[in-house]
Length: 165
Image (cartoon, rainbow, N blue to C red; front, side):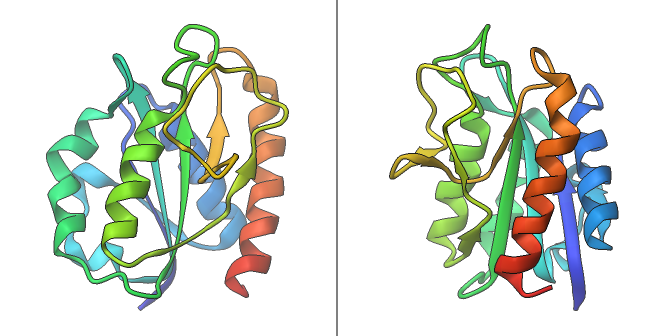
């Protein structure tokens, strides 16, 4: 079993860039979900990344590959999520793709780590907010690209502590 695996979907390259930074910080591998196999989901710490499209939709590569999650037993496995969205233009569906993956992972028994406070973000609604916090790391490269690397770095430190890496 691989120690850390980052699986992402990225039509524009922004999520891929974030996945690469996360994988490098945690000593893991990054794999595009469109080429991922079931074995790629076998890791001590699984990190999934997606952007949100349209009116809160999961990114297309995840839509065409998300059935693989339904075949996994993630009971007790540590899983973290990150997502890219546009809080200004789509503030009412900000990183909803993460919310979609979260619900799917919870139904498979995953233990979600890496939750983030909503403070510091301006948005009106998100299905990725549960019990007053984001269920993963939100990034907004459309409006706040200068904050992404620092947010990723801090989050990776949090994941190391929560996953015991």
